[in-house]
Length: 363
Ligand code: ADP
Ligand code: MG
Image (cartoon, rainbow, N blue to C red; front, side):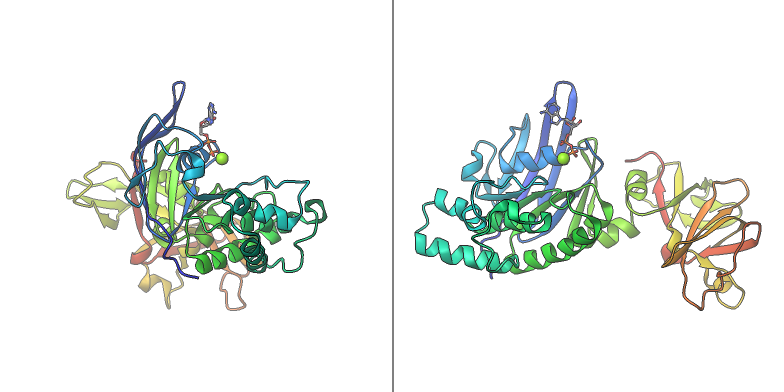
């Protein structure tokens, strides 16, 4: 299917208050045509409020929402041609699967013949061939969510909005549906805004992630950039595991840890306080043949805890004058770490490319 129908969304200065609370605080966000963008944030951060503003179900206090170049703020929901999927499937229980999916077409007065054809296509797309005449209560949770999905895209909306659509499903099914939704998006090519509080889900599915906290965007970027280059402590902490260590800011603009050089303060951000962000899986065990020579910074310490977790092992290292450092390494047979025990001395290091620094105050 083509993506000719997809639209870019421009959001500018969008603010929504509930009493004194800023549910959205001057949000600027440009979503590209055909993009899969995920709004990721903790509960209460404003994700649903933003999605509902795009759909037209709530009226912001100020700001702009444009589809392509068309201002939508005053356009009622049914004129926005947006498909929606919610956590609670919101299906009509007294209608069959096919009738549920046909509903948006009926509203739009599509002919019976075309309706039948499109419903069949939609059933096929969500892998429910042959189940059109079933009742909703004869379906599993995963199947119901597929019906809700089919109903959301059957009328070829220009934008698809999904609010935590998988959170009612168990973990295995959720992970399978994540991949299916991604494939479906590729097939439909429709601009999609997806809401989740699950960082792993966001990393799995998205072209870009917009991290939201207290109604403000903390960072908007690709999954790899969000993970590898978090812009602030909130993002570094919310996405992935990390240890953050305070750095010393020397008069020559060098950031150091102990007597080791870590980075130079970026010219465009002269903030005085900086943190080193360490991703547990990026630490190398510094044995003399490799790690010590390759690592740009090394941390020596004592193993406090070593835990086998199947596909990986987790080790907590106590170092002098700083928080414990968390390390994660794979448990392959070649692992030099297989027999680590509490009390062992250990040294771990970071490659230059894996050094992440963030300003302490921002975010
Ligand atoms: P999220 O979807 O990220 O969990 P919401 O957008 O639902 O967050 O809510 C953002 C904030 O706005 C929360 O503090 C929530 O309590 C508040 N809020 C949302 N809807 C209303 C409402 N109708 N009336 C009052 N406060 C609301
Ligand atoms: Mg919500």
